[in-house]
Length: 405
Image 1 (cartoon, one colour):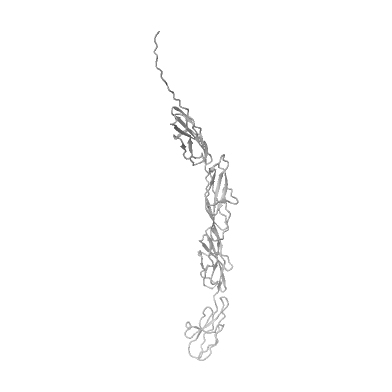
Image 2: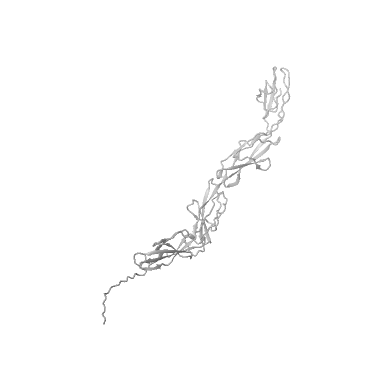
């Protein structure tokens, strides 16, 4: 029998590593607004060699292809966006883990992030109006969300604390109620709009957006447009200056003026070039030998108060010139003789209340005249001449007559 060789025995150790497990992601599903980033936390895996794990993150957008994006335990997304202005963006993430001899990756469940479009809610245009005038509508077209919206307008007096407007505040546009303002100062109200996207399958903060605030300034009504004149009765050929009779108020405090004039019973028409607070009328004339009236009024605008405030109507009366102021002709008399009475014609014109004054000169027919005391009637007194000299007598009726000697 052939011989046999007995060999020595040896021990083989097979180390079996446990299967990889506990590979989960948090959050598993979430809803965010466009423009957000999300931190996805991965659990600490188990299995493999128990100490060293290799990670690979993959991302898929809107059911597209999977792409590797990171190799860390946890992952922070980039800035996420919606699919379009009204459709969510869908971002999906998964993590694969290997360790030791467990070369077959363990792949986590998919974490899904829904990215909702943000509502853009902007209203434009501060408004400035006058007392008791409705401003133009506050407007702005929202975008984003589901494309269907509900609205709530709010009001504030300080641009800090807002409350819902009492009426008509649920439309895309809003027309604020007019405000009566006779305070002399501006009244300011602020408005903003809350837009909510309706018909969406989910809810989040990005389905409601509050707009910027806009202001509506109500300027005070124009007040105290009054004009006056020191003397409303003037003579033919004179002029006058109409001035303020009160301190203007309202509007924005800067005033624009126009003036209108009516002659006699005629209609008012603009005074060309008259844009100042006061008005110099220029030379005014009577209606021949009769009086004439000139009526004036001032129109004022300021800021948003573009409807002119008319002043009182001030009437200037222009008296006709005094005429027929004549006296009797020259006389030549003897020494110590008594001249005939010097007569004056009945003057007319002015306001027809005639006041006469008589003057005499002993030197000239054109100079050196002095008033004759007490002579205010229609005729002069009798004048006696006791020596040889020139005597000239004159009569004044608000203008001088020719002199006679």
